[in-house]
Image (cartoon, rainbow, N blue to C red; front, side, top):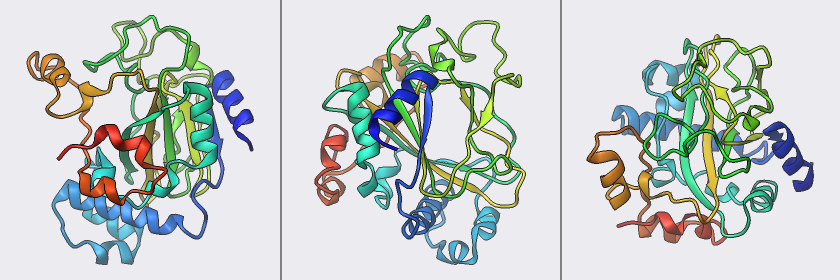
Length: 282
């Protein structure tokens, strides 16, 4: 699969699975690191090596079912950093969004055993419930790209992400003030499946939802979103004037992405630094 084919499928269908972005011999280490980091940052456990070494089921006994994400993950864990500019990822993103692309989010997404199905939504900045959203009806161009990195296999049973193909062409989504029910089964919905190391890429307008995990093991993933240079990300940055004006003062709802320190930035691979230099704060 080359970038031209990936780009065409993302533009036409709204989504595409890119195989083997993280090599098979390396993805287990990344998955274990992300699990440990999520456990540590979410629950306060500083030493969870035993839980991880005992296996995924052991981790699920430590990690509360209602805690499944660490936002601003790169500030806490750099195990996945070297894969972020993978040619099939960054080549496609650059082709769609143009030069000077930046990363807007890095978040662990762990679908725990017993987790219920979630509601249909589009990602920021198209989620109408957040302060920094683009109002509907949406313009017909791609302004943000979401990638979900499969650190464990994604299946229908363990909660492979639900998507509605071609819904990126709709001018609204169920997070808006409309008659769209986010909890209804959509007649065109599919579970996206793939192997460990594969990456799901989609237009952030695409309708997607968490699928129920009916297995006994966590489904471990990583969300990384890519933005063009012109998309203002400051509403996501703690301490920014935009966040103060749009989120803090009106007591509105919005995501928050942890900044990275100069120390962490200096340790990043050279080809990752241009993607993250805008997010450095000490």
